[in-house]
Image (cartoon, rainbow, N blue to C red):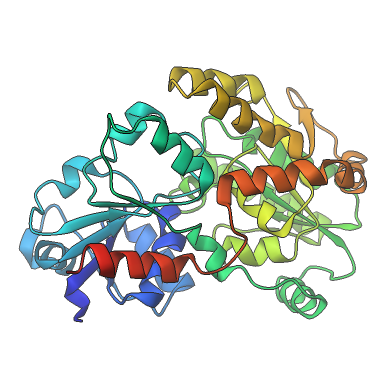
Amino acid sequence: MSAGDVVYFSKMFQAVPHLAQVGAQLPGVFVSSRRSTLKAVNNLYPQFETARYSRYFGPLAKGNRLLKKADVIVTGSPYGSFLAPYTAAKKCTVFHGTYMMLSRDALLRNSHFDLLCVIGPRMQGMIERFAPEIALHTVETGFLPFCEYPERSDSLRSAVLAGLNLDPANRTVVYTPSRRGIGSWERVAEQLIRTAPAHFNLILRPHPSQGLTSRSRDRASFKRVQSLISQRRNAMLDLTSQPLPVALAVADLVLSDANSPAEESLFYDLPQFFIETPEFSRATLAQLGKREEMHPTDLDRLLGLYDCGTSEFVDNQCDFSDSLDKAIDESARYAEQRQVYFSWVFGARDRDANRRVAEAIKTHLLV
């Protein structure tokens, strides 16, 4: 099979960990229109061949030529209008993130795909609610990023933390806020560094939309954060310099806005600490679900993510001097809910999704 037969496409970085895992099983070229995304792929997944798509250079650009002659195009977002001209290719989506909401409208935006690789029971159940009204070809394959989740061990922990100039003797907090506009970064990042006890390592990982495609406000924030880190020690700002699983594999606590990274971290059954803000909270998520016309049962179960750990509402200045230890020490009381929630979203706790996706593409699209 030539590299031109299968093309992986995404504008944004969020889908890259998914696509890279399939590419490891089913060779192809990753194409993107964004230099920042291609740079991150070359850094994190150097074995993944890349090419750039260009609106301006047309067929002179390698990515454009690859897309035009592709037998199969695999992506993680709808890209309906973008993919429409490539009528000769079969289309497959592996989705990106954990896809917390799959309303009727969201499903319709993905209805042009010839194959939808479904993450787990949550997504499959949402799809079945709309059948046979929306006829789709789906295969439940599992969550692709789990393929690169390393086994947690003392040796891995020591090696990773030492390589990041963090202290292996410390507890480690990984902070993964949501995207700009709704994420807690502006309210939390600096205060976390200022108030977290010295016996914690801090890994601050802004959303890729900020880390890879920063704006002037983001860059100013990162500069302030770096200044505080230089005074504190045992903290680092990770602008997607390494895969998220590496950070989660050494984490003792995940601090998040109740988002996809929080759901992913349940693979390791990690203690959770959820930040709620005026921009995004349990109430906001409920409103979004209703606006997207999610089924009430699905929405209730989605809100159950907040029951997997402790929560704190942050409005003005926040203080983490006591709450981080408390969130870890009390995590056992949420263990059952974490297991229930993980099973609903992902199903099997394994690392074989890439093999299943590759086999599904070969069986249903490369025929």
